[in-house]
Length: 189
Image (cartoon, rainbow, N blue to C red; front, side, top):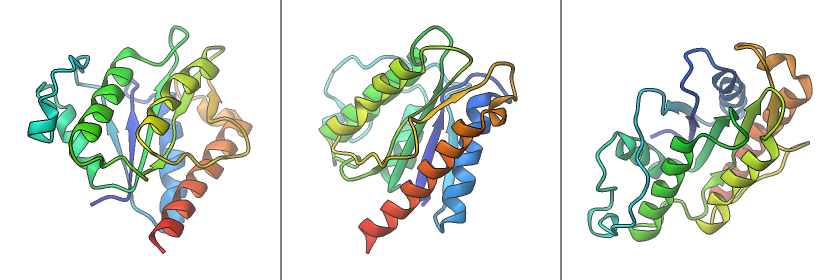
């Protein structure tokens, strides 16, 4: 079992989104919890059809690799999805994944309830605020807890591998990772 699951929605091998998730993972681990980055990179995630079968199965009826991710999240106490912003909003496959993860949780054992986490948006210029808002909607409807940071969980980066140049963005993600770890530990106490 891993304490915190981080979900990378970037299809790129050495993406800025992955670079930032590694920063967050490192801080979570420095604060005494285990963390694991999962990726949507090679998956073709389909949209939820609201068939309701997840209520009977405890997993999604669509077999596209998301159920393996759901099982990892189900065992965790924290969940952090991150998306690059290519055209003004979060990637469609991530939003489809979040909707299906939420639906499975609500229709089965409500494994997301009281889980700690929050989204991260990475982009070169614009769309981060809308992307962050779009992904954030997933958390309160699933009774999840989002800890704060020193700013919004937004990182600016242009060319692949430049995310660490955004010092304020990196500091924000570091504090967020620290707060996720501390809050999970407080809830456990």
